[in-house]
Amino acid sequence: MSSLENKNSELTSIRETSKENDPYAIFENVADTLWERTELAIAKDEADRISDDAVAKLMTTALKLYAAKTDGEGRTFRPVLGKYDEIVTPTEALTAVTEVLRALRLGPMEFGLWSRRRPEDYHDTDFEMNPNDNTIK
Image (cartoon, rainbow, N blue to C red):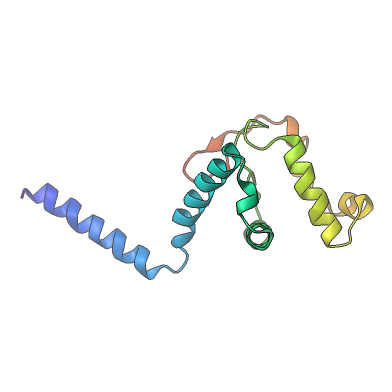
């Protein structure tokens, strides 16, 4: 084995060990698996095989994690995949948002008061996505 191959093997081992020691590294693999299975369930019209409780846990987890990251880090990032509506349609987004508001007994007035407007004209801004971490440049 050449010294370069040996060094690469050592680096791979270090990365794998650090992932094993990071209790949050699992999020990357789980997110990919959940995304793939969700696409499959929708494509096969089998979303009914996933329990309401499982969907509620995922939605709650996503909401809490997004709020913790944006509030705690003082920044924002695009909360859905895609550039506009090629992955999540406006109907899908509004269906989910409406039910989240309803579950918390909130209405359009509260939503309007708490809406963030950063940056201005958010929806008309041509954002550049960082493909490595789904953040906005």
